[in-house]
Length: 311
Image 1 (cartoon, rainbow, N blue to C red):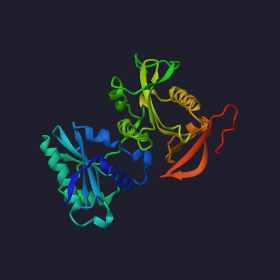
Image 2: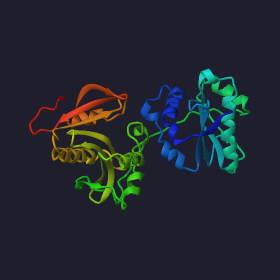
Image 3: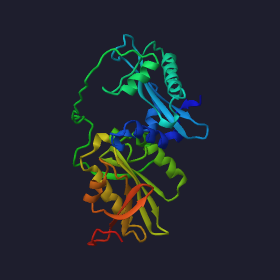
Image 4: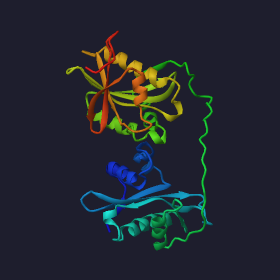
């Protein structure tokens, strides 16, 4: 059975399968960061590959200190498990779960835990077929807490600057991350910097508030064609909603104005709930009606006193 570990090249298909497993969740809640996922030693993902690179199922597992119904620690846990309907009843689900169980055993676990939504009889039957025993039923609760400001956090009125990404700050830039629900809207900074390495028109910059690194911006900067495009933009989850993003965008626009024909800046965004559309609209960007690889384009006229409308 062609079950193998998840790779970076599987990201788009992995996201698509997660969307089919959890159709009631918005895409921003489903787009897990594949880079941070694969970096960690306490979680793993396996996929079923038909041999041509097309994926038909996946399983995600983790190591937990504790799981309901289990008595040992650490314990392996099936976090997600799905097979495409057209590939079911062929042993693929069993093979995926077996890979996760083998991984857990290799990491010192003697138990495997899992769960399912109340009323999901299909999931209950699938678990039972693998030898899982239903231990108990729970209703879970969650409450989001505001993070208190840390002693090293920049002040809200800190001066925002754009600085080159170099050997001194490149690792820190790569470590920046948006909130989990936002990961489907922007690529990891490591990917952006890798693209910048082979794209001579890329203009990557680290965003600082005072002396604190808070974000990253990258333009497609083509002065020969007088074309400027906001390729990537992010503010780390710890520093959002403090005005740093707005000021960084203003500085980016100021830079574009210094370039040949720099009188407009274009961008595109994923049109999903929780996306950045309202933020860009508040800065004066207007939709053009164009769709670019599933994203909606917006543009802003940067000429002083010009109306903000697409050309």
